Length: 132
Image (tube, rainbow, N blue to C red):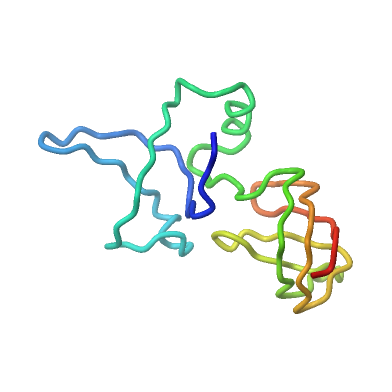
């Protein structure tokens, strides 16, 4: 399945029947973290929970349904800008929804091409492939 680069958030939700309409609730954290704005209009894609590969099912089970999925995957290549330096001297980049990627050996304001080597629910680690 191809996912658009314009994806702002990803979450699981039930569809509720309210008589003359159906409602899909957006978790509060998606609005509070800045991924989406209250009162704005968005496209919604629905994917059946019954369909999918074993890998999809494993990914979903790694993160509870009330938690947003990390916006990166191991082995993924990204271009990032280092915004800060962590306490241990590693570069810190932020991507969708403020998700943190730690990049050892990177300097502030450096733009680098990285490969994601480790993914956790609240941060990832990336290895520098090339300075941009």
